[in-house]
Image 1 (cartoon, rainbow, N blue to C red):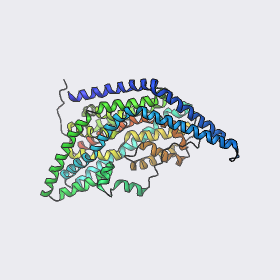
Image 2 (tube, rainbow, N blue to C red):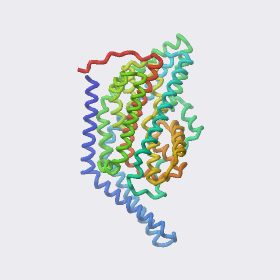
Image 3 (tube, rainbow, N blue to C red):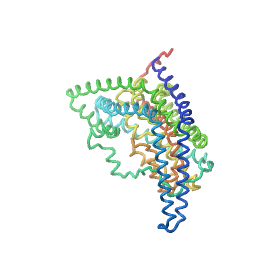
Image 4 (cartoon, helix red, strand yellow):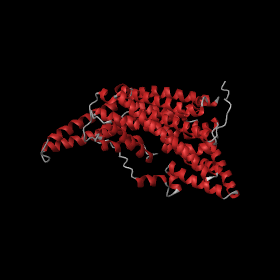
Length: 464
C-alpha cells in the first residue's frame, strides 16, 4: 500500500511540476527570457558586422567590440537572475540527489563485497561477469543500431528548417577526447577513498570485487567481514527508504525548474524531433522487454511493474543514479539473488546505458541532416563503433551524452556548433534516456539471475 502511495505521489508531483513550471514561466521568467533572447540576437548581429570590418584598429571596430561586451554582460546578468529565480525549485532536487549520492557509493561497496564473497569462486565471478558483459555489449549495439535506423527513417534534421548557428559559435561543452590511458585511469582506482568521494561507481566496483574475493579467500575470518558488510547494506537500505520519501518533492522541483526555464514553447518548436526521439525510445523499450520476455517469460511484466517508481524518479530528475537504490531493492524483491544484483547492477551504470546509446546516434545523425550533410552507410557504421567505444569511459560525467557527441562530430566534419540546436532541449531528452537506462539495467540483472539459476519465484503481492 505504501509503495502504491509513493507512485501516486510521484505522478501527482509530475503533473503539479508541469503546471507550476508553466505558470512560473509565464508570470516570472518570461520577461527575463525575452532579455536573454534580445541580447543573444544583438551579439549575433554584432558578430556578423565584426566579420565584415577589415580594419581592426578602426573606431567602428572598437565601438562594435565595446557594444558586444555590453550585450554579453546583459545576457550573463539576465541568465544569473533567471537561475536565482529558479533556485528555490532546483534546491529541492539538489537535496534529494545529494542524499542519493551519499548512499550510492557505500551501498555499492557493501552489497557487492557481500555478493562476491558469497559467490566465493573466482571462476564463478568470471562466469557471471562474462554473461553480464555479453548482455551489455549486445544491448549497446542494438540501441545504437536502432537509433541509426530510426533517425534515417524519420530524417528529423531535414524537416525542421531551423536556422543553423554560425560556424564559430561555441557551445561550452568539452569534447570527450578519452584516450586508452584515461580510460584505464577511470576504471582502476588509485585511492578507494577518492573513488568513494567522487562517486566513481566503476572504480568502487573494481575495489569491491578484489575486496570480496579476498574476503572469501581467508575462510572463517572472512565470515565476520561478510556479516558486518551485510549489516551495513541493510542499514543503508533502511536509509534509502527514508530518502525515497523525498522523491515527490524532488520530482516537483526538477520539473518545475525545467518547464519554467524552457517554457512549453520549446516543446512546440522542437515537437517533431522530441516526438520522434521518444517514439524511438518507446521502440527500444519494446525491444528490451521482448529480450527480457525471451529469458524471463511472463515474469518480465511483473518486473516492469516493480521498477516503474524507479523509472519515474529517473525520468523526473534526469539521472538514473537517483533510481539506483530503488532498483536494487525492487530487484531483490522480484527474486534476484543479492549476489547477482550487487554485481551486475553497478556494472550496468558504467557499461549499459541503453537510452544514452540511442541518443548518441540519433542526435549525431540529426545534426548531420540539419547541415544537409550526407553520411554514407559505412561512415554511419564507423560513427556507431566510435560512439560504442568512447561512451564506455565517461560514466558519471555531467551531460555525458553531449560530451561524447561533441568529441565525435569533428571526426566527420560536422560542426560542433550544431550542438546549439539541441542544448536547449537536452534536459527534456535526458529524462527519457535516464528512464530507459534504468529499464535496461534492471532487465539485464534479472536475465543474468535467470541464466545463473538464481531467480526465485516470488508470490505476487496483494495490492488491494
